[in-house]
Length: 559
Image (spheres, rainbow, N blue to C red):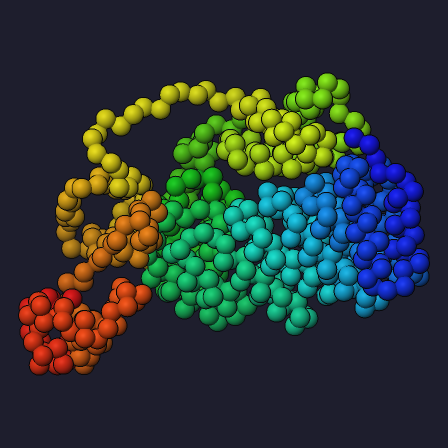
């Protein structure tokens, strides 16, 4: 593809950094420059020398207007060119962050706008690649404004790419945690905001209500014991995966350093949490942090019963480590390094164009390889994800239809799995749900990798001894916490308690019914509710009486 005509970029750049008299004139010049690049093809960013002009301008400490103009050019490239510009703009991000502490207020303002523009246009699957640049804002003696800026961009990234950011929490959480102890209050505040945003993307509904407690005790060691008790009371229905472990492990490590009763509680939680980790590889990265602390606790605790509990937790983690090494619960990874993927990608592009890729396309192809290599290592062959990781960039070196076909061809050549025909289910009837789940309540595992397979139009009974988890399972289904069970928009789910909480004893019968959350949105008035109650035997006097005045049978009927 042809490069932008140098006079076009030259004229725009001269206006942007020298002759522009107003902000509107400068922004128009920046937009014209970006449009010229977009028209010629994104590889013209390098061929026209625009990147070199931007970095040179940023380094000119004597010319704040030139630095500001370069910031406007960066913003325009993000807004007008979009994700295709990532391979060229990403290397500039650490330098950009440095200008969050620029001496010129207008340059600082434009730098903040440029950082936000970059994150907002970022392909979500590039999250992993942008994190090292953001982490550079915390290195060495960086100014506190740079740290705050990096934390704010992490907060924005959590909103723009939640699932992709969640996968990176094992490195994000420790990095933000360090900033929560910074000497500058502005950094501490930004760190709390970033931690709150990042922890909100864990994707585990069981833990989400616990996030504020986790963040609070991260900065207040005195709250650790109480946080451990609250964690022990959580009912775990969803599988515990890497993002969830990222925010729980720091608390567990602190709990193992507390007094003996909290050490015991923490060890029990670890032992039971191991049982709801479906993929051992999810926990592998956290074992070096947990195992040494368990060893210390085992040697320092005097109570033999607590030492036994700690040893049980240690064995559970050892078994998880062994399972991860042996590859249990995971497909064998496909072995293709980045060099091999690069050759495959170049062949795909050459096949589409009839010629070897131009040298100017190298940053684009390298960027694609860095995005798909982790997918290949994780045996992730989702065609939609591969398309999102390759097509937006291939469109800068190929026509749009050819780029989509090339992205599909790249996946096909990298996918070396043996495909077999799926077996059909001979059981008659339409599935209502068919899911595998675990159910835990604090220190007790109720169900471990249980299967729930229900067919439409059938009746089922749930049998089990006291404490087996029947009520907990039913409440989890009713509250929408059981993965794989149809949501309330698809299936109406009602859980009828066999008794009424004592706190409602003085509530009138009709008021008790009116307050039921399930009636919200139905538009039922008090008169209609009283009519229904009367139809099932609740007379006028009984409807106005308190629940405490009802006999056991009537309470059960009301429940």
